[in-house]
Length: 169
Image 1 (tube, one colour):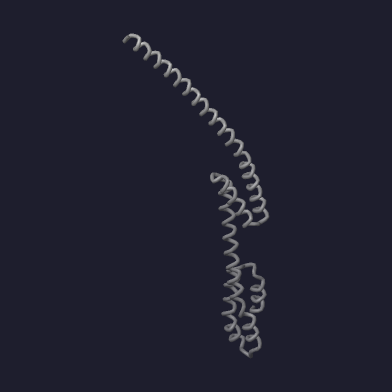
Image 2: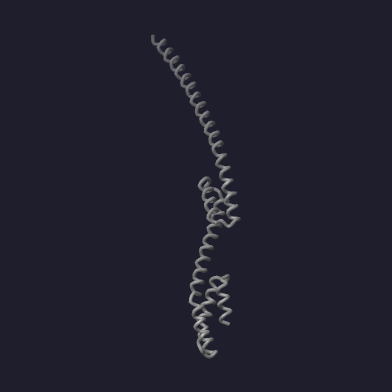
């Protein structure tokens, strides 16, 4: 009869709903378990990375204190590869790269200063052996003095320039 059919449909719907609820609860429990396992895995895998970051930061600082600029730069770059948000590594890298650039510029200035002075000793020798008046000798020394002054401006620690300067005075 019709009443029995409606009654059977209601019972079936309740059974299906109860089954769906139980299945949804199992899925939710499984999802929470997976999230918990993922969180534990992330924490455990992050700890060695943090230890490696601390170790590389220490290594970079040690290299920097020893003026081993390229090694310090490499250490800070490794830290940034592990932890791109590390401000300490970013600041250290900028500081070390400035030191490297300054050193390279100082080498270039020293090379230029040395090249300026290469022809000074032979010129001084030629001037000293010539029989010139004092005024003519001073006039001949002027371009050499200018080169020496320029070399000292480029590299104030260049001892050859001081030696040559003493010979021209």
